[in-house]
Every structure is written in C-alpha cells, then in structure tokens.
Length: 129
Image (cartoon, rainbow, N blue to C red; front, side, top):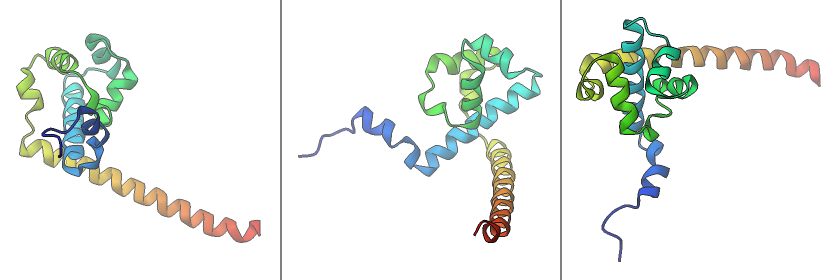
C-alpha cells in the first residue's frame, strides 16, 4: 500500500525535475533582482539587510537557491523592498515576459559560446594528433 503523502525528502530531491516549478524559481529570482536594481540597491546591501551572504543572494536571483529559501528570508527581502510579501511572490504576465527574455538572451549566449568552443576544438584537434 502506498503512503497517502509524499515524504518531504522526496519532494526536495525532485524539486528541479519539474520544469514548471524550476521556471517559477527562476522567474521569482529574476523579479527579486529586477526590484533590487530598480531601487539602486547592490547585492551586498540587500544581503546585509536580509542577513545572508552575497553569494547566496546571487543564487536566489538566479533561481538556483530559491527552493531552499525560508519564509523568513522571503519576508526580509520584501521588507527591504518595502513591499508586501504577496506582492513579491505574485508573478504577473509582465514578470514572465521579462524572465523569458532574460532566459532567451542567456540561452543565445550559451549557444554562441558552445559553437565557438566546438569550432576551436575542431581546429585544434588535428594539430594535436
């Protein structure tokens, strides 16, 4: 017989296997970064106000650290921005459009770098043989 609920550890392990959830994390992180920048606040200033390291804030803004973010940190970020936490986590169509444009530019950059690397390797391989 299967358990009625999924164990918390299994949910944590599978967090990034859900592309929709991952996209939500990335968009929320992007929104945090956009608000911070619009307030002319550095990562260092926001991190100090929230009580986290600048590198952890960077991970949150990239979406990679958000799945483990506590509600306390979320509330402190909202407080630093002087907005309600509900306003911070509510992702609107404009937030998704901004996030998608950001992700598209990153994808194009990665695609270019991958192509450049492959071209360089193709030129170098015959010389190494």
